[in-house]
Image (cartoon, rainbow, N blue to C red; front, side):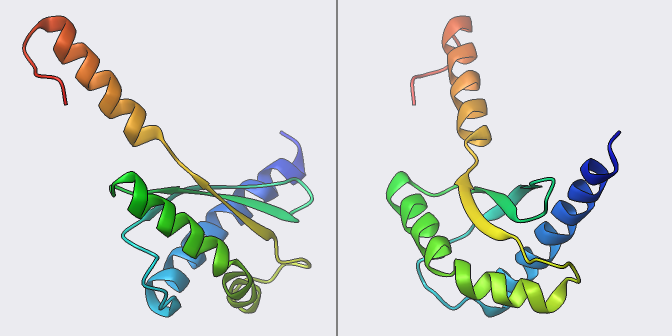
Length: 120
């Protein structure tokens, strides 16, 4: 395993933990609804972090949450830079994690195929 790959994994976990705390305690934007950071992938050069976010909200609320996170990205990055010790604080890109949606869709299809469920 390449050393920068291991470092990007460690930094990704650190960014995930710290961002979760910052959002919980310091982001006051009402547009940020209930959400969970499911994963953070950091580029090998540590300059870009893709932050995967899951919500259980309807599509309109989900979009509001994603827009609010984008608006707060500069604030979040500056707060993150004060908490983690890396040469460059990664640029934050928020991406909706649709894993829960896909799992729900598969479950619905399986129930329908078994004939035991109703269509949602």
